Length: 190
Image (cartoon, rainbow, N blue to C red; front, side, top):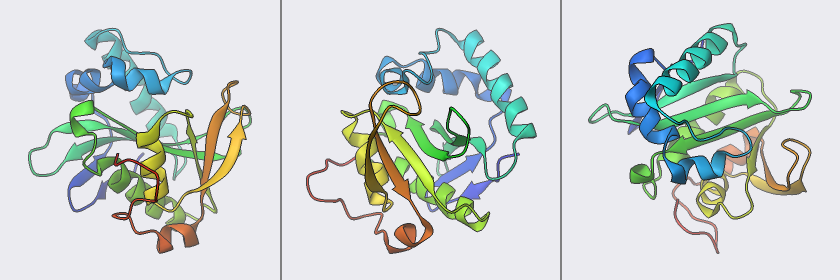
């Protein structure tokens, strides 16, 4: 089961079936879905989102820490902003991917950086040596978030999803040295 994590502004918790409407607003949104392909298609309706949440909840119950999926909820108003995950990458599951998906209304506020920073800290306390982010080449918001957490660009790869993606790696020392508020030169705010 996903570990409950609390940051200054966010609560990262397990998904619940009651989150279906809020989750659909995120994963059914075209601007979010365009960045999830080829991993996941746009969710077509709330009923499909509920089925997907049920699957995520079951997978999460069986997952070995630190893997899992989290609902990202804002603490001051309990709004569901999106989701985050620590999941084994295909084909062999040897590498662990970290990622977050937010509703567009939550973009440009540092939530992705804050959520993934908390997940990375937790994962490293579980004896994980490194985490990866696989980013579509033109997803500047995702690049900004991973770079703010100290992730280093490794190169381009088609190893994981059959298309050329940017690969970033994070090790515990990189996270410790990261300044989540500092934006690397040449990157826009997430």
